[in-house]
Image (cartoon, rainbow, N blue to C red; front, top):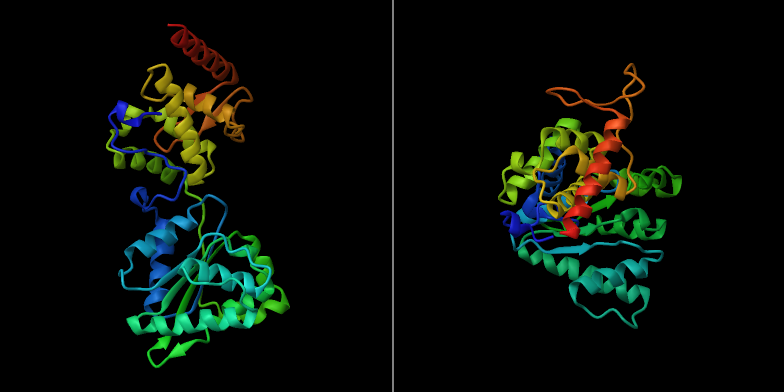
Length: 315
């Protein structure tokens, strides 16, 4: 979709991590502040977890972007490591250093030597391990041992682990107790609330140079906020498809019909019926007003939208 054709300066809903479109929700800001405070105190081990798509990697990238450029950093986007050697090789690869043909002990010494040497910058090295739930117990133990590296100025490494909630079960094992005991901060990133989800949609249109009311009706935003569970990644996907559908038939702003079809194309359900409401209505709990969409109305709108698309293509 050519977003510039519709007056936007950039893609508003990006699938990749996008620090330029960072939405400062209370949960994301709190997580960012906690990570920053841990680094300022030189706390060596920090865990950031939460559901998939909630914005954990975005918080980490935003924090890295805010750090002084002289702070040394290593970022492993997929920290899958069955053996300690796998972890050492990934670190050396990120550093652009040779790692092939080395024994595990040689790899360990190469990584340790680099981490200690990097403290000459006056800062500890930041080590970000994304998808850390894929680290084996042996690899986690090596991460714990990194926290023992110190100089006269303090710790040599501050490690941020980004993980799915499944890592909590691993950390509850007796075999990982030493690692769990060394964690200085545990941060859980929760999904956005309904109000925050609505603000998220408006924020991304504004950042892209658009006027939110010209892109989405209130009903469409209410439906997006109610249907996507507060997960930014899902909000991005549904909003992108809904915008593309509306653009195809020149029916901006995006309305509820387009959102319904986007949800259908992506295999996502409409919001569940609220208890106590009539069985023939699905109510979207918009904070300003409730928007009721009956199944018959949904089907009718869906059909009209498809018909408009066909007519547009025929023309």
